[in-house]
Image 1 (cartoon, rainbow, N blue to C red):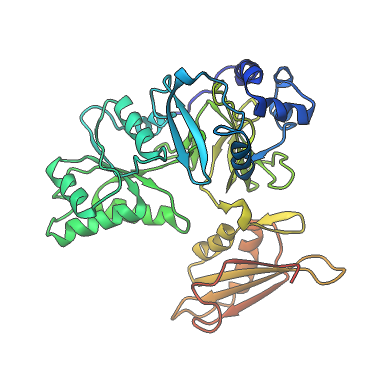
Image 2: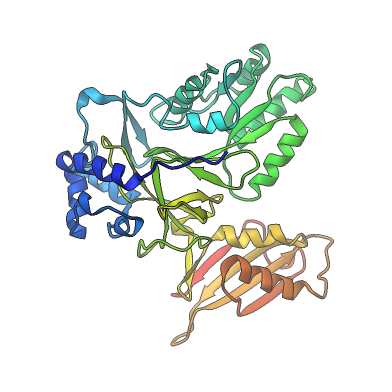
Length: 411
């Protein structure tokens, strides 16, 4: 079921930012740089006039004005917890937060509720993941088993002893748990009650891995896109592509350099604004790259695709960014390919040159149409034409540990 955003999110945003503007000097400085006030926010174009604040900038501001960098607009008595994420970045959690920063939406969409017993293997120490998921599961009416990180042997035993029906884990740790259970003689899936798993994302053909796990172990897998700063940003819905954006997160997909919002389907940095008045982050660049799959009536992103990488991994060619995930996607879409690499260079006085190299899988030979297929698929994925293409036999050039993308413009 498609969620409907609030009637006028910009009215809500103006009210929240107006209140925060009075109490948060870090926020006031952002508006001053743009020559704006919260009263100027009536559309996504108005929002885009504000500069993007990077995670690195937030770290520096918190060092200069500890602990919250001048962005806290709530009283001390309103703060329930303070989380410390890598950086470090300090994030407050308020007493009014009853659903784990919105994570309950992800579990409710997956059908988690009364009668479920959920093993939560995410860390409860300093970072927000474990506690936020714990609260979200409880808000859905399910029972939490707060295992956190720790002994895989013990956690595998908990799954069987406590009739766990849902597991929250990284994909790698989930695989470790099921391998342990199988090594102990448990015939999965018939031997357990697990019917779903909330899994952390991975690069590569992650959806393909999830489908194999689902088929082998008789489960449904689901996931979400979230950060420590905002909690849940987007979540999966059954039979829908990508992540539906939480209605209280105002998302734009932006050019990583200029901060200008990009058209639907063009990859860029995920930039998020919250409707929270107490922790009023506005236009925070997550550093993560995705594409917008659909846009809401108010011009903000409604749904995003899977993450394609990080901003720092991108290479610009002819005013368009290429991401490692796009090069990897080429090998996933063409079954004869084992590996691919793009090298971007710039001869003196010339335009950027894109050299594409692909390696065949062992035992595969290049069909007559492969060159045209590779070039066409690369153009569809990146919106760029490769200047050269080299097709290598398996084991004769590219190795599996070589980078997908190289920037040699200034070499």
